[in-house]
Structure formats: C-alpha cells, structure tokens
Amino acid sequence: MEDENISNEIILNYEIHQLTPVPSPATPHSSVSQPSPNPTEPVSVCKCLLSPEPEPEPIISERKKMMFSAVARTEGYLRDRRIPELIRFLLCKVLARDPDSNVSTFLSQLLDDCMLYRAGLGNPPVLFEDRHLKAIIKSFDPGQRGWLTVGQVRRAFQTLGLTPDDDLLYDRTPTDIVFQSLKEKQELELFNLLTAGMKPWHADEGSEP
Image (cartoon, rainbow, N blue to C red; front, side):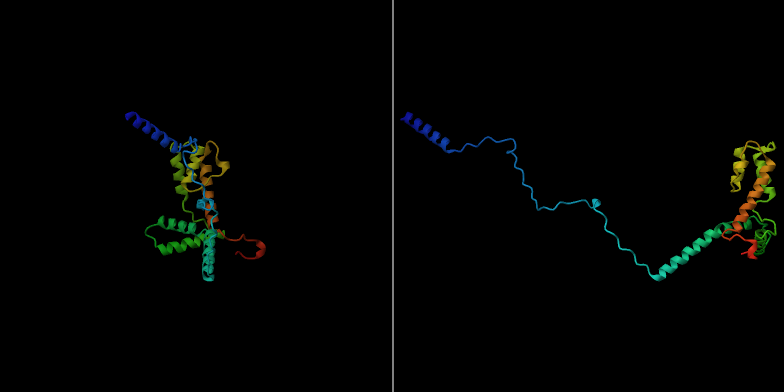
C-alpha cells in the first residue's frame, strides 16, 4: 500500500512538471526592458542657444530730441573752448592772489590781462612767475651745478603740469635753458587755452573773430 502511494506521488509530480512552462533563457539585453522613445515628445532647448528677439526701438519725442541736441551742443562748446580748464586756471589764480585784494576786482583785472595777452598787447598772466620757476629748478639743483639730468628735467616739467620737448631731453641740460624752456612752455599753454575754439585770424579778413 505504501509503495502504491509513492508511485502515485511520483506520477503526480511528473505531470505537474510537464504542465509547468519552462522560461526560455534570457538574453543579455532582454533582462532590462527599454522604454520605447516617444517621437511626439517635445525637445527642450536652452534659451541661450536661441537668437535674442529684437527689442523694440524706444520712441523719443521731438521735445526730448531737442533737449538732447541742446545738451550735445553745449558739451561740444565747453569742450572745444576748454571752459573747465579756463575756470580751473582762474580759480588757481584767485587762490594764489594777495589775500588783502578784492576778489571781484582781481578777477576783472585778470580777465582784462588775459584778453590783452591773447591779442598780443600785454604780458601773459601765467600762474607761475619767474621766481617760482627758479625755485623749482633750484630744488633739483641744490648743489648749484648749473645743469640738470634728463630725469630731473622731466620731473621739473611734470611739477608744473607741462611736457618737455624732445630736443630738451639730453644729458646735463643747463639750468638757464631749462628756465627759459619752462617759461616759454607755460606761456604757450596759456595762449592755447585762451584761444581754444577760435578760428585762425587772417590779415585779409580785416578784423579778428
């Protein structure tokens, strides 16, 4: 009886084994399922790769155009005439004046001197007088050698805000030549400042502009 039960159990297990489907061996790529790409899905693109959209031009009224034009003309006039530099020169002269003198009287006389010098009828009202130039040269030649090096000549001119000429830059320049060059350079700079923006005068025109 026991042998019959064992035989029935073996037959039952065999039938179950035959009825159970055996999975096929998996390939290396079939173990992981790959999602199929969706062709209709939109592709995002960085905005930095796109060309910028043209900005609309600002609308400027005629009144603003007139204001901008007036400002541009004013700035051009001040720049061509070197008005800020002229005001700076006048202020420096006022600060260097005699403290006991009246400011308005001093300025009036200074402007008259400037116009006379521009017309070639007076002495130049320069900022640094001869005694100032001699003191500057003496500070670079305390031993009274009578000459300055190239570097000393450059520094002497830079102290006055001037630029030396190339023909003056040679070794052992005599102090009297440096003094005369400083004086002429300062007068020339003042003349260019006072005549800035003016048209050149010609004798056939009959009068100075």
